[in-house]
Image 1 (cartoon, rainbow, N blue to C red):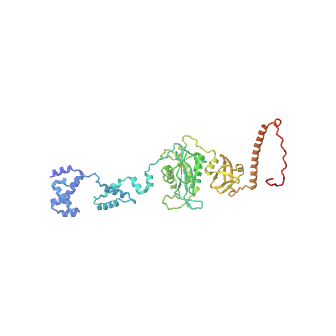
Image 2 (image 1 turned 45 degrees about the vertical axis):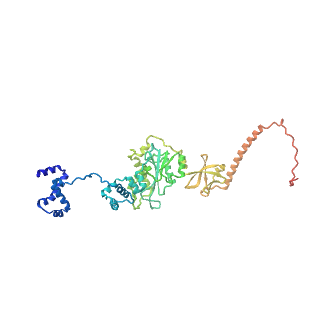
Image 3 (image 1 turned 135 degrees about the vertical axis):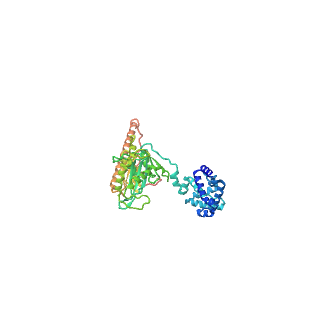
Length: 489
């Protein structure tokens, strides 16, 4: 018996051997000592039917009978009907999102009503886990989150410096003291060179973004910097922004046309294509703002401000020019400033700062010169130079923040600065206007006299000789009576 038992045990695996011996020790007291199975079941807290089944199998097969028989479907997933699977998937995709336990209870209730086989908890969990993550995200978090995580993104890549600039605004997570000493969060406007990731311009303000703020930032980006550490400048080939009103204004379209810049806008509500500038804002938040007093990340209720805007700007400028521009970025394997300077290219520049200011800080409109000046937005603009251009079409440029004067151009040539007497301190008197008109009439009369003299000279050359051509004597006409006479007389 011992040899037979040893042979059986050697044929079993270690797990099966431990299982068979454990069950044998439980029923041995019944088999050898006659202890009732009811007593063993109560003491070991086992079902009486299980002990009886073990005794029967031991007597029939020995220790091998005490090994749990392998399931025919071991390692295989129990198949469920298509109705059950569709029901589980449908419940898992409902909003708000259900837990696995809630889905299993609901499926159990419906399966009982329909007479279906009830799936186990593990089966329900397996079916839910096999659902497409994109489908789960779209069902529970909406199309915006789905687009950010799963939509295919086209990333624009510049081939060289100044080929493309990106621009955007961000409300910074820091409290600063404004002019009145009240805590407020500043806006940061950034223009970033796509190729090098170098910052071409920045602007800090407590005011919300506007077309003027964008124009001022673009002015700083294009013109040469006074700081020797900051070399980024020039006119970009492409300007890539979102659909903000400050970027899509008629003024920006005009500026782009004048400077020969191509404007490109990202899709409405889809900011993924501008990930580089979004990443820059994240870098500012993590590497700069988090070390300053007044830092207030999203969700923070603290509003303690210690720095003023000038103090904050000085710290930001130092971090930007001395740290960020010289910090190697993993994606481009280079630092922004050296990468922008590579190739030794000459940036395209405007002729002078005055021309740049005219393009960026003023708006162009076509107007006609009237006898009392140029009419614009219910105002009247005058200058003595305009006396020579009455009735002509001119181009005016104006600063929306200062309507006291306008710049007047004729055929792309600068004429004058016309003044609005109602808004400006400078006034033009009636005497000056009369004098200007008189001078203009004299100029017109002088031009008329010159042309009349030329015509007279031409006619004298071609007049017939008085000797060869004599006119017939004319009859003397009777003098016209001074008295008024009737029509029939």
